[in-house]
Amino acid sequence: MIEKKIKTNNKLFVYGTLMTGFDNPYALQLHRSVGKVVKASIKGELYIVSNWHFEYPLAVFDEHSQSEIKGEVLEIENNLEELLEVLDKYEGIESVNPDAGEYVRAEIPVSTENGTEICWAYINNKPFEGLARLESGDFRAYLKNKI
Image (cartoon, rainbow, N blue to C red):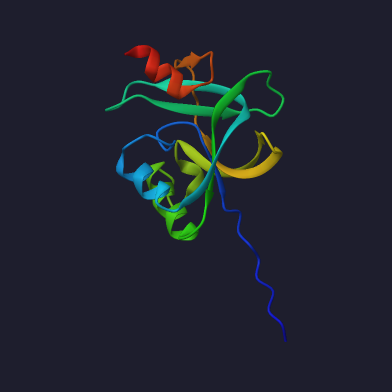
């Protein structure tokens, strides 16, 4: 009997503190397992959470939106399952009740130079009223302009 292996999606769309160039321990751990990085975007709106130890973005995915959230697709070459577990914890996703956190990890359509790809992404799971909307949809540019 031949056993068929099901390949898990190894592409992750990131738009905030996990992007290339960020030096937090989670981004550094993630990028040690990344082979290819491609500029990308998703449909939706980006908000800034500023009532924490540091500012971070919150993506509200909406495939019918006219707005885009800019980021990167990371192709993870090794340690995928372990990395996703670590990143789930970083993003506040509980293994017992994954829908209770601020984010959920979902597979969504992502636009790249190669067309549309289905990738994992951490997207909003809670009310976001009162947060400032980032019109550009670009967290990196937002931080650069603050300096």
